Length: 251
Length: 275
Image (cartoon, rainbow over all chains, first blue to last red; front, side, top):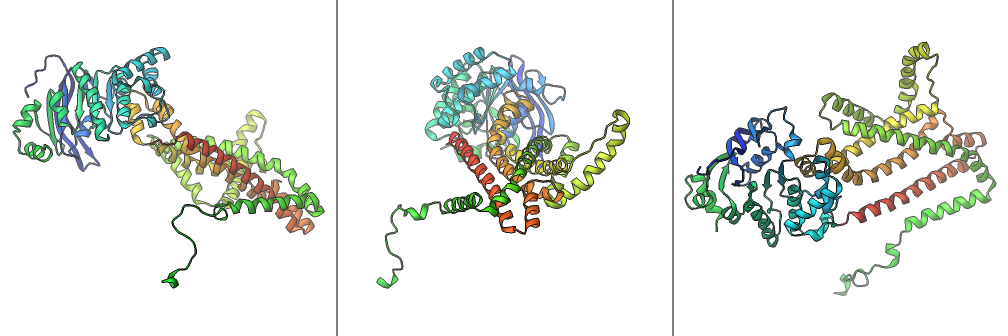
């Protein structure tokens, strides 16, 4: 662990475990701190629990043990207003999850208006700025089904960004995309990282990890096996399991 | 080689003759309806049956609309109640639905109209009379509407539940992850999408209620089936009485089906290509 933690950590997971049906241990005793402005990329074999870890960060999945603290709020404390904290934590899903009955613009303004109580003009203004940022302002009036996968995912990113979150979570954002659309999404994410957004990204894109990650986290069987700067972990994995994984996927 | 050929023509074509694709069933039904209409207009016996039965139409229609309206309210509450986090609410909803769905309509009508409603009103009439000097008396028409509402409330609750559950969980997750509350997510994200899955089967149940109002004849409600029974029994003109009542039901249900079909067509056109 070489990353220095100058400011207060944005995300603190302590002794976090998630068990399904009391028998399936998806996540075991995970400890992880993410500093403000840091980009952490989580990799690991499918079924290793990396998505579950991510989903526990905004409590879409409720941990069965341990604590989750985001931006100083203890989400595992029942008195914490989850909706309030979730508005500060953007999430991008593998399947985009745009609202199909709403236009792109309405997708981006809905939560701004209902959660942030912005006026229609303010919300629209913010939506257009985010659409500019992801490069598709001309699609504002389109419906999600009229967009390509890459465009849909960029709208999903814009939808999250419009809430001005403190953290962005990405759950395999390019895994459902056709190969030619992967880059346009990764480019947006890379730019976001360079602007200093705190990001936790679950992905199989090792190129992105190399280019953007401050730290790489390797998870296997629900446990954090290895953490470190991506070049180091790629070049000299200290654990046998990490080495075996990279041997399988790096071409 | 020739003896292996059993049919003429070429299989490799996508042209089918007009008589293969023509909607014969519609032609047959329209033909029958036209013939019935002609009988009613020209045949004195059919005209007599028509005149005796048609005054019941307003009861049939008003029972249908009232039962559907009450059932809608019950269904929305119970449908969402079944998915509630509250175990009492969930259990009550589920129990009610399973009870009603497991019993045929006819015994349910007798049970509700002859036992539950009288005993229920008896129970509250004591206090009502003492405090307000007034008694609640439900006519058989009202009891019948209560019964149909309870029955279809349970059927339609399943439609609501199914419609809501057909929306992928990712939609709720996306809403919640943006900071929308459970309630806001249900109202702005899930329900608008679920309505597309809910409206067509609700329409079918509206038609089913219309047909099932005929069962109210067992309670002596003077809707069209009861009038057809009375007419036939008193004149021995069974053919005329029951043909006319069948004709009225067919016109109503087919008309509603056509309307419903148009509505569905519009809805599927709107969502073409959607995931």
